[in-house]
Each structure stands twice: as structure tokens, then as C-alpha cells.
Image 1 (cartoon, one colour):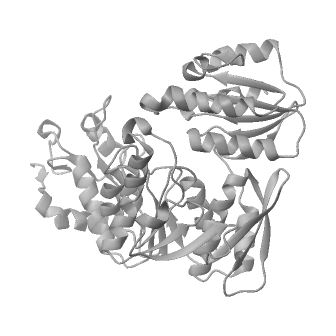
Image 2 (image 1 turned 180 degrees about the vertical axis):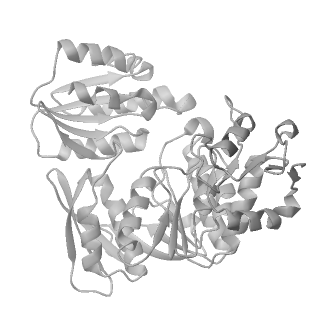
Length: 438
């Protein structure tokens, strides 16, 4: 039999097929029974080539966009598989009536998403973005995981160039939004800090048109002017005018946070497993969202207390040799400075810093790496190790290594013992590979 052929106008017909087979996969190695395989393309792969294999492994249908691979009625031929995935997810979202919270920001969006999910799960059945699947593929796949059983969805949205958040909001169609922070990241794609703000602000633009609401971090001043016309539920560290005001009680080394609501007289306090004062705003965002949706304070305290950071994000790990503060999932000038300031303020002995290059900074790279070196000069850390070609050009006499392999060899000969070590750098530098050396 011939393959089915779908045009953009026939998405409703495809949607009926999806309702019968509601598991979507783009990985031909993961093909659950009765699922639908989308043959996406990338710079180094063509999913069409794997469509027949996906069917053999359990998928019921394969969406392809190259006619030669559509050999029978199990194949659905479309103009563009990625565009079809987007249209299918958008159509599915339009059938849903549950609250959808969109989260973006330079730093903290994944942690904030995880904490909000932990808090809301105390009362609701929550669907949320897994790991950091927050791009043009991850967002539609997340939307297509929402079922009638879910009460609330949390969709994380990342971007590295203008217009990307606009595109993702049109798929996820959030009715609530959070911009966690604005900072110097992906400058190679955005061009400037103003470009970052404009792109993240595309979330506000969508909510403004759709009469949505925002949870606004009052510690980020630049969010106020771009949120004009939106109903804002506010939160802030040491911002007494905010709807929810937080205060850092201690960080020795874990953060203890207290907060109170404008209409409440009694403050709540929670001791967490988070390292770094910069995580306080992420926690306070979860508090604010939780209270808005009616989660009782005791459950919020429980959720935040029980949450343990993972994936090299603000983790404290004690090895047989040292105490490690691992924040090596990613880095940019804003998060790097925040991590160094927090590390400096911790009351822990024998501080050592291992920093990796901050990637995707474009023409600003040399200036921003030099700025971090200037911050290092103002602190009295026991030792400093810099990894990557960018830091090598501005190392200013610190121990410098062009890649992680060089540092690994050095540590084998000169092991660090009884130190408190901050590990921070962009994921592409691979600092996580030296953890077993420490």
C-alpha cells in the first residue's frame, strides 16, 4: 500500500492518529510498542534512514519527509518532520485547559523548574520538562506528553538566538510565565545583553497577548519595564514590597531560606541541600508559585528540604580527599561571578577554585574571561586552576591548562588533599571528568 501523505492543513487527521498512539519518539533506539516515530534531521544525521528500523522495534507509524523512505502505509509522508512535530504539539496544546507555566531565563531555569515541580506535586499531578529538554525538539515532545491525568504542566524554554522563545511559546502556549534571570550568556547568538533581554522577553510578549500572568523576580530590575501591562505576582530576596519576600538566613554551606507573604505575619524557614546564595531566588520562585496555586506552607517547606540537586548543579560532594562544590553543568559570566561570590562568603576552610572556559560568548569572550580573572585577583583562594583556551589567554599567572586532560594529568602528580573545591565551567569543557581525581 502507498504511504499516507499529510499536508499542514491535515494536522487534525494526524492528531486523531496520535490520540490512538500517544507516545512520540525521535530516537530509533527507543521505540515503545504502539508509538509514533518522527524522523528528524540534524547536521550529522537523517532520521529518515532509521524509520524502517523504528517500525521493526515497535513503533506503529513513522513520520518521514523523504519520499523514498515511505514504502507502505505505516509511513506518513509530510513536507517537513520538525514542522509537523511543532504543529502537532501546538494543536494538542490547544485542546488542553490546564494551567501551563512557561519558564525561561539566563540562569536558574532548570533548577527553578525542578523546584516548582517538587512543590506543586505536593497537591497536583504535574507534567514537567525532563532534564533540560528545552529546545525546539524538547518543548514539543514535552507538550505531547501532557495527558488528561495532568493538573498542571511546567515547560522550560531555552534559547541561544533571537526569536526562539517566541517560537517555543507559540507551541507551548503558556498562561503563566517566569523569567528567572537576565545575564550574559550565548552572546555569540544574541549579540548583546539587550538581545538576551529582548529574546527572554518574548515570553512576556506572548502572555501579554493571551491575557496571561507572570511571576516576577523583583531582584532583576530589567524585568519591570518589559512586563508593563501584565498582572505580576512578585517575589524577591530582601524586597519587602514583593508579594513574597525572602531572606537568606545562612549558607554554611547549605542555604537556609526564610520567607513571608504580604498577607501573612508568620515567616517560614527551610534548610535546603543547595549550595550557593544564587539559588535562593530559584527557591523563592517555587514558594511563590506554590502559594499561588494553594500549596500549604508546610508542604512547600517539605518539598524544598527534601530536594537534592543533581546533574552537577550546585551539588556538594564529599570524597575521601576533599569537599567538592560542583556547578559544572554550564557557565556564563553572570553565573560564574555569582558562584565565586557565594564561594568566597562560605565559612569553609582551604578554598580552591577550578574554572573552565565560558563558551558561546562570541566577540565578548576575551573581555568576559578577563573580568573573571579580575574577580579572582580580589579573592584570597588557596589555589586557582583555569581550564580552556579562553582562560589561557588571560590567565595572569594562575595555573592554566588548555584542556581537561592536561589538568587531569597534573592532579595525578600533584593531588589536592583536604581542600574545599569549587568546580565551575561550561559543560563543553568537561570539568565533570576530573571529579574522580579529587
